Length: 100
Image 1 (cartoon, one colour):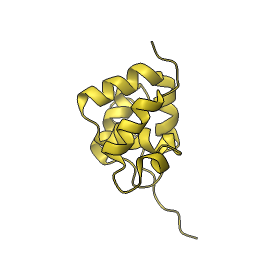
Image 2 (image 1 turned 90 degrees about the vertical axis):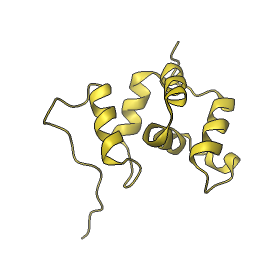
Image 3 (image 1 turned 180 degrees about the vertical axis):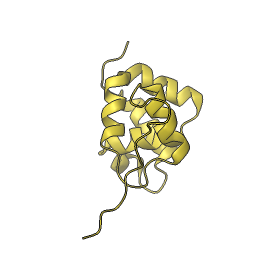
């Protein structure tokens, strides 16, 4: 059952696997980054665990607040369609840096 909260053990395991450039404890301090990285690069089992624990509303929030470079085009499209956040042909653009 989705609770919107990520079990600390799962968070740590996902941090080890998908946020390899930081120590797991440090990465776990920013769970939204771990969630986004898993959404972008995760294998099927990790995505299933993430989805079951967090629920679609939390995943939508992560996607809405994504930072530049957190998602590749394929994952961006998949999650927008999977979460009902886009209709065919109406995919929002990836986050971009704003100059000025």
